[in-house]
Image 1 (tube, rainbow, N blue to C red):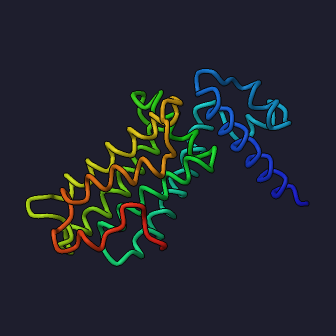
Image 2 (cartoon, rainbow, N blue to C red; image 1 turned 180 degrees about the vertical axis):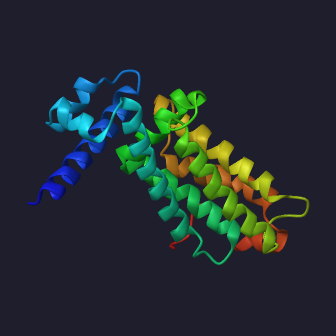
Length: 207
């Protein structure tokens, strides 16, 4: 293994360790020693790559942003842009269940987002992704009469960020996917063009 490959592996281990600790303990509850111990590296190795704990947050959030972009790329394969929004939210729901890195990014944003970047980066990334898909829905005439892209995006953000917080609190009594499906059953008639409503799948499509 080359020196560059070892450095890349060390950086990846640090980001993974930081994400898992942020997900379990939050940013404030995690210190540098925790991260180096979990990654199995020295402080010198950490500071070679990151000058502060905040820089690790930035690295985690950058990976979350990439994951969200990949979710959007899959979701937009749906025939209808409203279905793409539905699929996008279910994609996020699955990621929140399966990926500690995504959970870490959203926890840090929820708890420390008022401090701005990089803490709130995943919320801003999610807002941008949702906004783009909603705008395509408006352009295609897929949204209901009088429903602007900003309205649809705001609805999706409120639903997803609310369910993420509820899920993290442990107060959610049903699976996240079921909660999203139930919400979409109520929301679809309000944001989708009437002629498209019957074909929309609140539980997500197979794209």
